[in-house]
Length: 267
Image: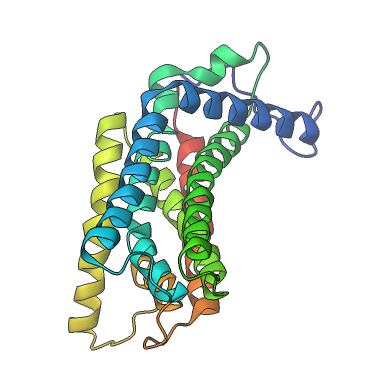
């Protein structure tokens, strides 16, 4: 039986208040971010990010030429791990966002009056996106500071790379929510999200390239993510605008599908 705690009114129906829906979404978002801040996931990911920065810096100092004198080369060494960081963040923060609602019913606890599922979905999606993008911004900020300390300048390409990383985060968040919308257990959703982003999409990419004889499968999310690095390498050909568009389309399409699947599920 569908829970009566969730409203069913829509646009044009009596009592519908779009602003109230957005207020509810904001409360859900704020609650999710607070939950992340008080939980272990945020601490674990922050420690992992700091560890990666420390290891790369130590390796450059011990076995390399320190921070060097080329901003793009230095940025490349740090940003080459970005796709993996985004993948881990999405697994931690996005893959369990919807399925946890079926396990914990947090929205039912937050509100004493009906709340529509789209408000829950929007609030949770924004929360996971904000937290992950926040880490991406901090990571790039540290890399930019290191470029100023070492080479003494920052190449504009790093900002293009940053924009692509944000777009990739959005695309991956959509995938994470799509999987979360159909799973029954948070652990299963996390494992499947990680497997999909780390292996499955790359396996599909390989099949497409071999079977269809396509040398440039630009429409695959993980392939488009290569431009996060390519824009920093003068030896590579990057298509930043196309890659950004592909990532955004993946994010929008998968988020829309996940919302409609989430909407049809009973609590």
